[in-house]
Length: 239
Image 1 (cartoon, rainbow, N blue to C red):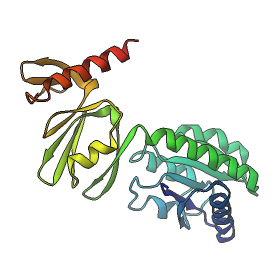
Image 2 (image 1 turned 30 degrees about the vertical axis):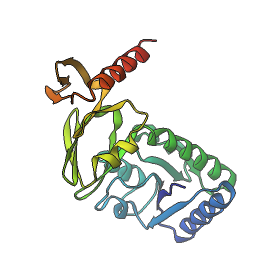
Image 3 (image 1 turned 60 degrees about the vertical axis):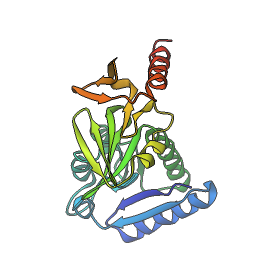
Image 4 (image 1 turned 90 degrees about the vertical axis):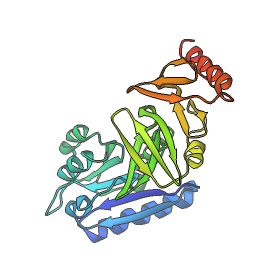
């Protein structure tokens, strides 16, 4: 079972405790597992923030940094975390769309309404997780959309993940990342490269040309299967 990481920013201890109790009840009723962290203010959430939460429950009114301001700063580094606002003022709800908030829950928070929002959040998470690769890099975690990965390159005990706008060095073998990308149109062109078929521009002789000007070797033993996989992928896209 995948553990879902939830952060709660709430300056009222009683309200924070209620939300934690609701999450524990939801775990029991829906056979989920949550790792819950609480923060007394929005300022505490954004301080040293890294994109390793799945869901954030943000109170809108907090003394040092309100929920909206915290969400704006979080969105600069984490475009995918699911945000739910907790508020006692419904007129603020529409503003949540500016930071791609999933929804809001009005205080006093009833369990049924809260559980419905958590259910929606978990469903959204599971849709997202199929389309992102979570990488452990120096300094923390980074979520990379799988469609943006051009290819992965093995280098001893590290793997370099080349994307359309940069690259990430990961302390993990290529084989481990390949397992996570199974079924997502990636193919080993040789022992050192795992190629995203969507970014292949052409194959000439024993090399494949990829987006970004990358020219990668296709091993002789894998060439036939590589071409077959590329043909199948292109055919599937146009059916």
